[in-house]
Image 1 (cartoon, rainbow, N blue to C red):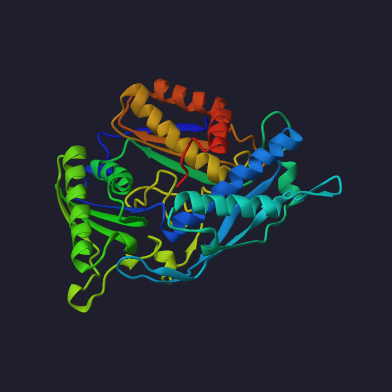
Image 2: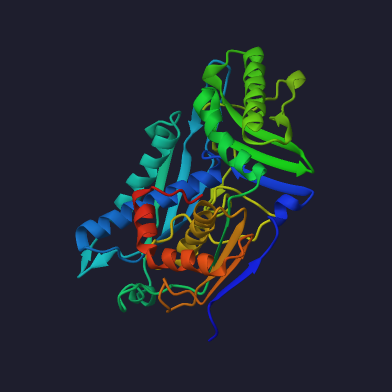
Length: 385
């Protein structure tokens, strides 16, 4: 086969040059993001368990998590949860070794509960019901862990990453954490949708307001005004573009219809979730970019290229910016099942950089050090959604 590496040079980031751009982020408390977070928490727990007990990570995938909404009765000054939020953790794992049953289900339940309680302070132990249905893994996929020095790809799949991103992408990606850090009344369920037309950003924010922080409609409206002001301030610091902000557009003050919650989650009011329906590996949903539909969260970090190649492509694109001062890079990696994970079938880079040797060198270096990426995933040092 011809050289696996190909590169196309472009003058600028094509999305930044375009007149229109959409960028979305589902916040950490969105039902889909909660499922991603649970899946990844279970994944990390199993990785550490296998490595501690057997000296290596055994095969598993826990990327099948469903969240069923609970039910609350929010009220100004503080309401209560009537029905718990239900979580079903599925997937496959190595559940037996030498005839001995491993505590996979228990580990998964603990990891899921701990993640939810740590992520959403308004949730208590009685607010969560976790069920696990993790089945025994496939022997064919298990075998891909054990051939040769480097694990073999479990699938023929691709991963995509770009960087450093447009001003709109960076603005949307960094706003949520400020809202949580500076406004106690804002719940963990925040959804951001940005539209850019030319040099104008139109940002729509859906933010769950926690009822115990507001005693009435006047205080609720004050919180909405604070969210709007903070978003405008953040935009002024992070971009030269003008911004127009709308918060909780479905509110109807005349009818007392507002986004008031007890837990700070839409998951208390009929909004379900599932892994892979939300943010991509870079923490955003960017329809103007090439994207993979693979769910990054929950997949094992040893052989699952659906996880590794999305994270690796993103890391390479960022290295192009950091090391070569590249204005734009889009990296696509394609695997073939049964081939070494560190030897993709194809690598395609589109970039404003014209030094092909330098770009190729960064790609090769990152492929050689893919174990560093695995370690970062297992320790939770790299976000995956």
